[in-house]
Image (cartoon, rainbow, N blue to C red):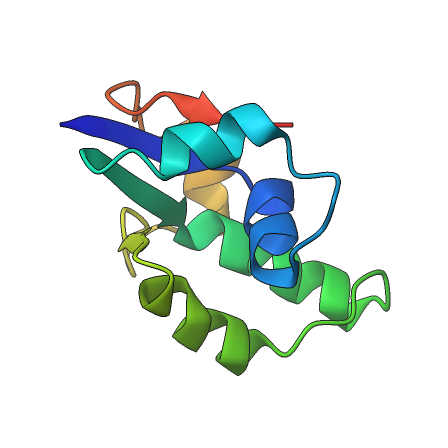
Length: 102
């Protein structure tokens, strides 16, 4: 089983059928054995960009579409994680997933 983690741009491009989505990514994602993940951090990043007017996306619809595409949410962000933890460098290690980035 191949595990893939899509970055924020790739998720947006995939869901919107954007021609900037590299064919190599499409091919890797469509392999039957591929287990494709989208990080909740991407959703957080998109929410920030929506709030400052740099992105227009329906976040509830996007959240609904991810599993409909056969992708799984990578829910590694704990409710206990605070901004202070991030500043102190307590970042999660998710090296078991190759990151698919543009």
